Length: 93
Image (cartoon, rainbow, N blue to C red; front, side, top):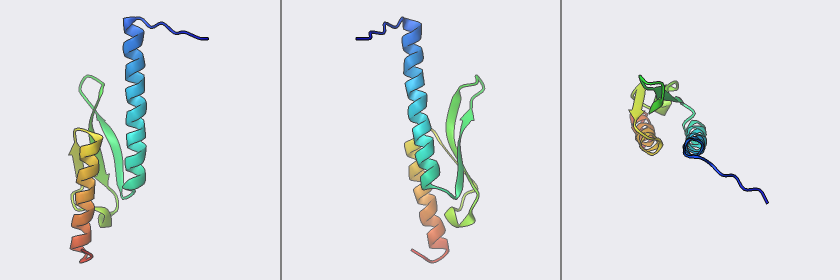
């Protein structure tokens, strides 16, 4: 049996590492789902990760050149709206 005892600093670090792993998974999913955009995280003034950003690379994938949201779920929703707007512009919806 292996038991790991974490101090407050190590515990916070473990939580942050888990959070970053989850955020990396969200980035991967968004990038796979919305291939017409370059999806990345902005860096805040203090060096921490900030807003979720999508830059349009394929004009058929959206209308706005840049979409910025505060979290992955909001960005996914906004990019779905972008896809609908682009399809409507082409007369597909």
